[in-house]
Length: 257
Image 1: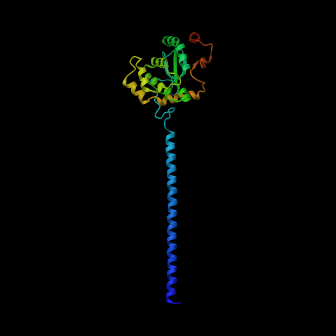
Image 2 (image 1 turned 135 degrees about the horizontal axis):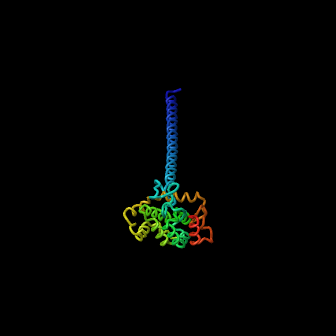
Image 3 (image 1 turned 180 degrees about the vertical axis):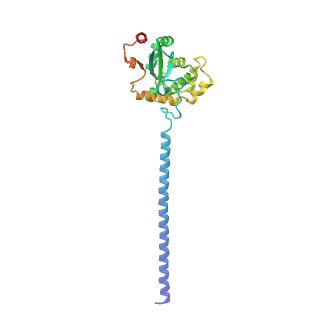
C-alpha cells in the first residue's frame, strides 16, 4: 500500500473519531439541558404549591388569624359569653345572635323592655354569644366586624348600650354596611363615652376577630338551627311560637322563687 493511501485512511479514521467525540459532547449537553429543565419544573411546581399553601391560610373574611383575645369580663367555656345584668342573678338567659340577622333584631325589639327590666332588677343575667351566620350565608364581614366592635364596647364597659344601637341601626340583610369600621365607629358616637381612641384602635385592628371566629365555631358545633337561639334552662324558647315577653317574665319569676 502506498504511503498516500495509508495517509488517506488515517485521515478518514481521525475524522470519524472527531465526529464521534462531537456527537458524545452534543448528547452530554442534551442530557444536561433535560436535567436542568426537569429541576426547574420541580422548583417551579414547588413554588406554586408554596403559594397555594400560603394563600390557603389567609383570611378570606370568614376566618381570622392571630391570637384569641376575649373581651374584658367574658364568661363561660373559653370566655365566649358576654354577660349583661347583675352578677349572682338566679336565672340566666343564653342568647346567640348575629348583628346582621333580621330575626335577631325582631327578637331584640320585641323583648328589649322586658329584658332590661329583668336584668336591672337582678332577676336575670343574659349571656350573649356573637355569631357570624349571615357572613357565611351571604358573604362579607359585617357580622364579624360588628361583633368585634361590640366586644370592643365590652372592653369599655358599654356593651349593652352599643348592642342595642347596632340592632337599632341594622342595615338590610343583604347590605354588608357593618363591614365598614368607619360606620361602626360612627354608631359608637350614639353611646356616651364610647368613641375613644382605645375603642377606635380596637375596632380598626380587629382585636377580637379571632375570638368572634371561635364563638361562631362554638355555635356551629352546638348544632343550633339558626339565630337567634334563646336558651332558658337549656330549652330554646324562641322556637316556642307561643312565647311572649310577658310569658318569659313569668318563667323567670317562677324560676327565682
